[in-house]
Image (cartoon, rainbow, N blue to C red):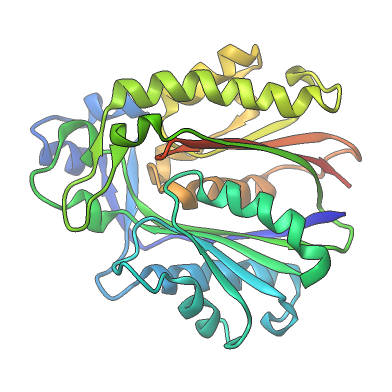
Length: 311
């Protein structure tokens, strides 16, 4: 058995409004809000790296859990925006947490990375002990590349989120997961080194609005749970309009889908755990057995859902 003991996050200080972002592409804040639901996003400083943000989010999570870094059996970092081909940020993040020598794994996956990491940690925590799962992204280094594409540059921000997965009961029990990948659509959303991000927005929205509800239904049906019984859906914060589509497809009130995209934009693989950290602080304690669903969709395409329940 595996449990999410606590969440944590870290957000940069600099706020970039949608007025500023809209001006980059010859538009305005009203248009940005209409197409994405984003009011503002955060940009990290030049000297704030992905591994820095990962470590800061991880420390926030551990502090809230009352656990020292030395108790960890492993660190997993999901990121698609670190500034090297290799090594990824996981080993540096573990060093900054003060645990060199502990296994540290990189998951190089945009948007869905922290979901896949959470599913993996669920399977590994019993042999390894507590695992710190982190999603950390510095997407500002991507969206500031010229030329700035109108439908892309206004979407993204920076930040990091974390979850502590342990074999000890508490918080949310991780019950099940369903993951999927399809390279057929690899050319519809990709990032080449030092070039602007390419996104076929129509394809991404169409595939995500079909695949995410389907994968959520799959994992719920295995446990005879109806979507209407789920207390909260903690999603990758890609686009508010997409979240509304997914809620409608599941016939669930959109209010059950926690959303902070208006404040932070799309922070890729960090977004789901940042949302979970804020949700956990704002939500009253859930009744024992209450279902919670995590879900994400990202480049690859990769997508999935993780089912948990309150303990």
